[in-house]
Length: 227
Image (cartoon, rainbow, N blue to C red; front, side, top):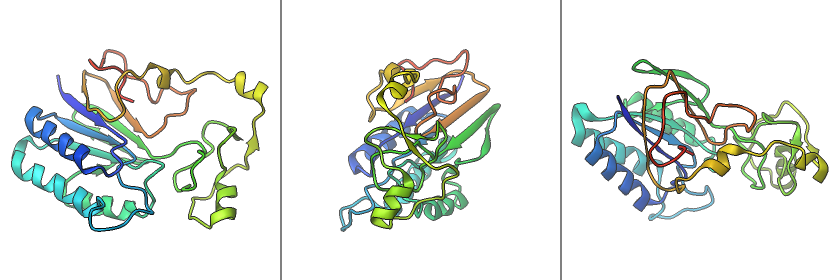
């Protein structure tokens, strides 16, 4: 029965990555799933800021140390990761350090792995991975990709639908996100994932009406849902 780590929202903190790599070296999971928001805010700069080179070299060192015990690593980006990071992830994939899972169906032993970077519109200005997957509405306090682009000129991917503002009655009538409320694992801890699912999905924010963020039947996490 394989064991996997799910880790997300590291945001380029070097101490968090050191803890992840140390845990992987000690516990030797069969796979590591990185669920996005991996890098620092794109406006940060300087010699002490975690870079894509740091990301790559850390996994290279782990692979050199573990040899045949090096885990399968599946990576997606999050809404705080600019799309320019994709080129670096593809280069690391060519080195065999990880597999970039966004928009792909990948195999891990007898399992199928699905990855998805995108999120519904957020209050933040970076819009590279925002899509109208959940509905055509933009929640109160959030900024549509179109509006953010008009304000700042930041890059964002084209959207298929125009947004509408959702009033309070509409919002209160929507189902609540059970996944978010059910997550008992602190966001910056490593959640061991042990079981025998047929499909494992990794997404930065799964749409609330779907089951894409749910654990498959027969699998459980000892520290709660791997949010």
